[in-house]
Amino acid sequence: MAGAQRVYRQRIRSTRSLSKMFRAQELIAASRIGKARDRMMHATPYSRAITRAVSAVATHSNVTHHYLTERSDTNRVAVLLIASDRGMAGAYSATVIRETERLIGRLGDAGKEVDLYVSGRRAVAYYQFRHRALAGQWQGVSDAPTVEVANEIADQMLAAFDPPAHEGGVAEVHIVYTHFVNMVTQRPQIVRMLPLEIVEGVAEHDDDSQPLPLYEFEPSSDAVLDELLPRYVRSRIFACMLQAAASELASRQRAMHTATENAEDLIRTYTRLANQARQGEITQEISEIVSGADALAAS
Amino acid sequence: MALEVDIVDTEGTVWSGPADRVIAPAGGGEMGILAGHVPVLSVLKPGDVRVLEPQSKDSLRWHVTGGFFSVDSDQVTIVVDEATPALAAAR
Image (cartoon, one colour):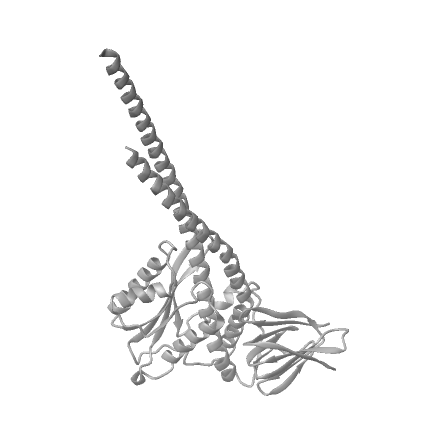
């Protein structure tokens, strides 16, 4: 009987220390998420300026650029998956990996070969465990992406898209990441990064719907586009990574909050069981004493 | 009438405010921008961007590694890869 009590006490102790860890993780995630959202905000003026410039060039000149044109010379495509480095974020990585698998399946059905690029240790581990070849991988920055890493990823994506088909160029670049809608909703999202298809539509996203002025291009519209588009891609990829980071932290905070609550529930249940066990023990002891006394009195 | 200048990099706004004149290393050579300039979208070469604030003798100066800038209806947006403040130079 005393054994049962001890077991419950033990469980309560270990659950309590776990719940402390969950609580700490939750608080860490909560404190970082503000920073992540700030960084998202700070990156906005840059990407807005670039988007505006790209749409200005695209609407006011009949330039073509190989980042803007569809390719049909190869059936290889690249997919970039942005997941998290660490777990403890609920279904965050699993969801975005599942979305990627679905996309790969769809591309495979369309007769395309997929080169997979992966950012985030969890996703890298997932694919390595299944012995799937990765064309590129990045680890260690998922919850606080830096411009340097984003540029490195973007440059590799551009380098994959640049060469002609016989040198292993890809026809399309897709990105799968988690879009941060708000603190409770994060949605996995697939965007086709290259060739760029958004150019006509981007002007509508602008706050001011005035028509864009007729720009002069210096030195020429082609040269401007050459400078702009790689920057546009870099800024888009950086933005995706920031979104993913904020989403990761938000899911981590939520997952850890739920875990803390579960732990508290468990502690409550175990406390009740322990109390019951103690009460049972006392009752038994009393009945033993009483029956002992009765037996003595009877003799 | 003054120019409204925004200098932004990937991590946020570097500087923002009114200016009398902006001098930037454009694709075709140094370009000075005054109020009423025709809309321009230009490549930014490595070099110094100078901003002359109103009622100020000194100019603000940043060393930039590349980027682009746009001018439209006295709104100057300078988008840079990296901007490091250089010493303020006399006018």
